[in-house]
Image (cartoon, rainbow, N blue to C red; front, side, top):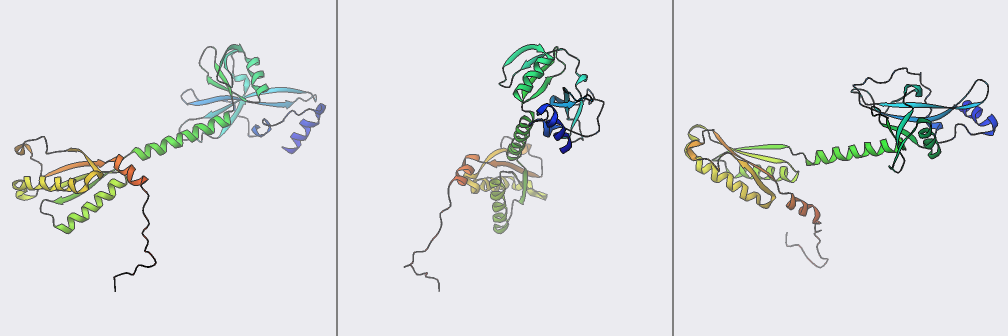
Length: 277
């Protein structure tokens, strides 16, 4: 690479491989085929220069393909001959995203060279193909960043469903354990399905089970809101399941206020004496 740079800069005192084009050279073995038509890919011209055998310089424009086919690393770019692009005319969009209109292929390349930017093929199947002048590396970075942010938002908005089971005659200790667990799940942003089992002759105590599940909801207070249940809108004789349930979801407004409220630091004044001995 150093020898190539020296040779390029020594001819006629020119800077044939000046930045930002020099870092974009790819000296990997030359591939000869484009990705299949079923692959989703983006195309752009990486502008570079080459030195002819006679010692004079001539521009050689190449087409870089970022493959997006499944199972392959989309960051590995390949270089193929610009001759693969057959159209003599293109519809050009400039770096300000303004529609320039239909221009010759050479004119589009010249504008990209003058701006020291890339010429991206936005729609290769259009007639003529639609191309856009841009900094492709910056564009790809911004797109990847946006994708990561969307994935984070999607993960944050996705709720897991947690289940808590108890009998209609649960004791006080076990009840408090499940109540604390429900509070934790809700604060973590998860849904909670509260199930009260009706074993054996439990259907006889259906009303008691409903009162229990309502009490559970009341004890959670404003932390949760009811999403649905399997007993409220049905007649008692229609409930044939051996359990009843209620699905509750976090109250986002309450959780947000809780997170925004700073915790007060407890401090003991120097002149106070603890009453504990």
